Length: 434
Image (cartoon, rainbow, N blue to C red; front, side, top):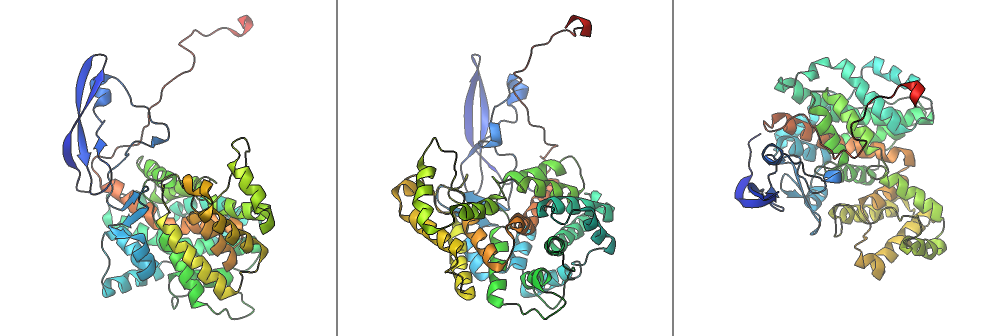
């Protein structure tokens, strides 16, 4: 990957009376960065940044976020434009290759994905090792990692064609795996992919069709599913993406690195937030109890957290949430579900959050997890599947970020440092003298 940062002056660092000049670099958008790569070598000091919230771990050309302005770009294109005008396969091509495809390129890309949606028959036997009530993310972590045993050639990161094919395989097979996880939990037969359907429609058919009767795909619901995938395709250097990059930096199998990303995404502070949000709506139960929980959320001494509001990065309205909000209302109208108790709670909570001074002052806007939980619940997915669907969509981002890292000559095996605050060096004491 060609380095595209530009020098933009220097920053002075003074350590124990000695001054050091550190390069300041500029990217296309966003704040300038102070290049600290020489700090340890020249000063014998590390920098301290828990959570890496002030550290750029890499140079990337895939996704840009401006949290203060509520901007999300994929390869320069605003997320709202992509969600409105594009399709998920087209966004996958964009994220992987850097440009929107021509009609012919998109057709070829979709055709190649369809050629790799089937799973090896032995992979289906993996499911028998899980309990029927296993959490879907536990199954997804194991099965994605297990896929590495079927494609050992992907270990060769120098083989560009093998890497390209591995990327296609992951994007193509993830919907099949995720649909099988749902069917396994439900005790139903697996449904194989069908090439006459587009990506989102094929996934919904694998999830919801049964052998006893024909399943008719609702195009409006398939479009909502496609839009969900687009809105979750990539999100810069978040926890799971950083995990994929870190795992792959050791030379691990790409499928194993993605499995590590799946495991990280599982956490309720990351991909599991939409499941936690729906749990909260069920805990509230009815709209007349909302004021009680609003007060709990405002009470600093109360451990209750209002899930689905605010974001670590966005200090403005999450641009994905704007699109997801419109999609949620479209889905509810299409399914005539506005009168269900939980959705009444969600809509009233949304109204209050957008009008309440406390939420406005603290910029606690409804986020993408709030609306995606509503949509997925309305579509008929069990809440335990929500994070699995997030992982399905995020796979293309993980793959693109992994490939970008492998192409970047400045990248090394990840090795964060620490401040050691344990015991000072001491001598071993024999057991009879302790």
